Image (cartoon, rainbow, N blue to C red; front, side, top):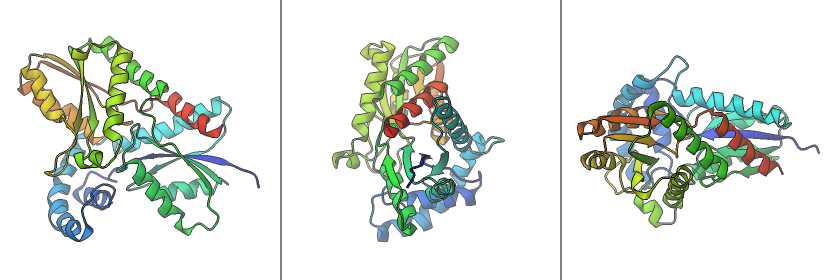
Amino acid sequence: MTTKTGILLVNLGTPAAPTASAVRSFLGQFLSDPRVVEIPRLLWSPLLNFVILPLRAPRVAKLYQQIWTEEGSPLMAISRRQRAALEQELKREGVDVPVQLAMTYGSPSLAEGWQALKAQGVNRVILLPLYPQYAASTTAAVFDGWARAMKKERHLPVMRLIRDYHAHPEYIQALAMSVRRQWEQQGQGEHLLMSFHGIPQRSEDEGDPYGHQCRRTAALLAEALGLAPEQWSASFQSRFGKQEWLKPYTDATITALAEQGIKRLDVICPAFSADCLETLEEIQVENREHFLAAGGEAFHYVPALNSDQAHIRMMVSLICRELA
């Protein structure tokens, strides 16, 4: 039997529209995943459906309205560009394989992505979750979603999962190039803050390598940029609920840096492969306000790698390694 390989490019997902109902549907699926919220379902489900979603969905919908574009959600628009650019770059390398986009939550689902590949005769799949650092709540959730999609398949395709690339040289190089490009355009700030999405501290205590990998990414990026220890720091954003999450927290760090006399701050979010609500609103709007309110004067966000050529080239390297 002839082997035909396909690529499934996976990200978290996004609401279909910036409305309370669409956001509620998306958050309901996302926050119902035991990989994301590790609370017994009997306790969590009533709280989620009768308290959190009714209160949170309208508020989050308003935030999405601030960043929504003519192409829709920024995450979805960027993900589509990434898919097209990756397929094209692979062809330039002489690798003619189909590339499909899938989301862990929302649409297109992992099952829909697989069916699109299957229709093209694919029987070997390389899953590339666009999470540089591995976490049970992200990469493992992709694996779970893939397993659910396979439940109806009698003849399973061969599958390879690219688990993480937090220290991949081309990933670090792409990040460094994006920072240097920002410095050329805006001037170099006094401090570079690397803000990663947070996870509960309990997750790290129980063995999740995410925090360690984030700190490793930050150290490698600082080294690539030639920064002294006092010129950079790493922090964690987007915490949810009252439990302790990985520290230091981004909002507190940004305020503290301004209070310490830092006037020009650069912020990059290396855990995000595409700009989304957490970067465009939480960092660019909310945390900018924290910095300016605490005495800072210039706040510059370094965009995610998105469909940058160096980012796509890094994906090609990951995929070619698996193909070999």
